[in-house]
Length: 167
Image (cartoon, rainbow, N blue to C red; front, side, top):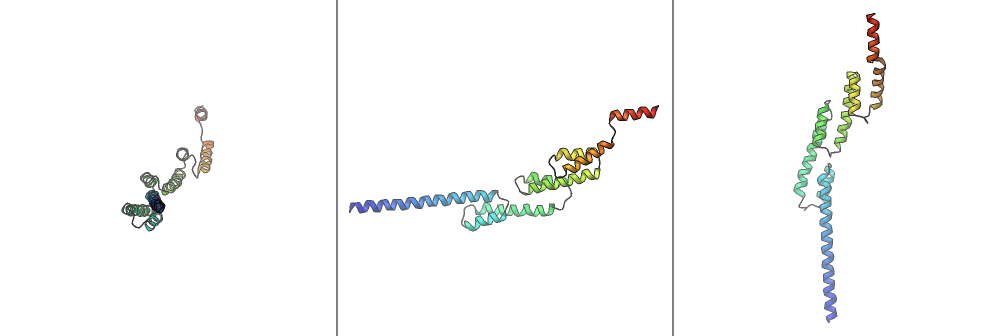
């Protein structure tokens, strides 16, 4: 009879231990998923968490995060049509971890290329190249810069022309 009680006790302890481990795993999964949702810029990711863990203690924080994401996306929609470099610099500075920061970099690159083209000067192309050494328009900027350099006189050439003109 004693053997029965020992086996029953060990079985109870085993079930309790298994339940405890399962509960800890669930808490760990919830916490990990919370961290992912909290740092995500995706409303869908936050919604997935809230669906999978409807009674989570993190719900209130993630509801706020969802509103933040919504506001960021609304601001991006408004900003997309801007032609001001500074608007995109400000957005990227405020949300550096956002996937939209990369989109800002692309837009800044394009706008600064258009500015260099509009200016059409050696300084404009040099400025573009210094700001965007790996930019989308580097080849075109280099070609335009070389074109200007070929048609611009350097100091020694200017001196020679000046000497000829004063003779």
